[in-house]
Length: 197
Length: 197
Image 1 (spheres, chains in turn green, red):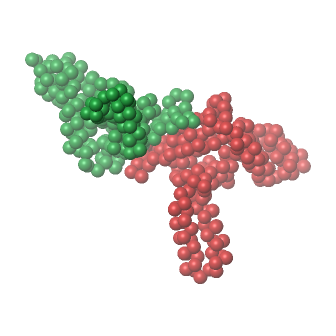
Image 2 (tube, chains in turn purple, brown; image 1 turned 90 degrees about the vertical axis):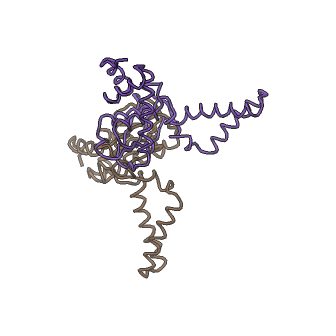
Image 3 (tube, helix red, strand yellow; image 1 turned 45 degrees about the horizontal axis):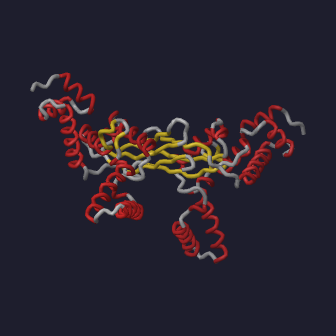
């Protein structure tokens, strides 16, 4: 199948990936837009994994306070060089993440950051529910695992659906930016204040 | 001594207090500008103490990120009503405090918030120094107390000199705003992020 410029344009608009990357992705996917998106996502992940152990100590501090000033967030987003920190793509990621934190209220970055007590409590709730419904132990385990994955998607920033495109997780968006900018990118810390919260 | 409008104007510009309050302060101080300022400060303190146990659950979330995006702060400033939260004076206080936090790096709000370990360590340093200089115990105590007061002025937001007027502490400025707006005002929490910090 021939890859036309209008197909490349569409993929570029959907993913913000480079022209060459889009062309490659479409070729590898036989021109299927959805498959090409998945291809790019995997490529982003591969790039992110490859760069994940590189020191990231530059970056930006970004704040977002929602209209009305009743809720706001502060975030530190790290990359490797001041040059990348000043690119529009990096600034946009920092801004989007600050907005995400305000809108979707993550409690922590990744499942590893959930306090053991909170995780144990969450597990117990679902175990008790499944057992009360008379489920056998093996099924209970699977139900609890499923519920925990859902819980991670709720409370962990990296697992949440991205506010600007709910087909992607925040981790996907970060990986895409890593692939695009060629540097390791890390959300170092964030905080969210809500009035009286 | 006659209190002229130009004297009132000068005091108003220095303190942002109301015309009537300035007139009273100047009358009580025999027209002495510095004494009148102290009078207003005490009045602010009295008003603040009187209102300190009133519930403050409205207010603003305010952020400040310094040019260059390498350091920023997020603050929750509480008052009693949404009406006061929307006044220019309250917004200005929230903004000034966020800037203060970015510029002067407080670690906590008041001396009571200093972790006991950190306080004990600070005490020990000065005790050892004073004893090494051969000071008697009674003098050592006084030296340590003086050093601790200085330490509070460094690390506690409420004790710091105000960035826009170093004759006032942040607590003085807050008290003045309480007196002006007639509501209890509380800095509920703040956080400061510095790149790689």
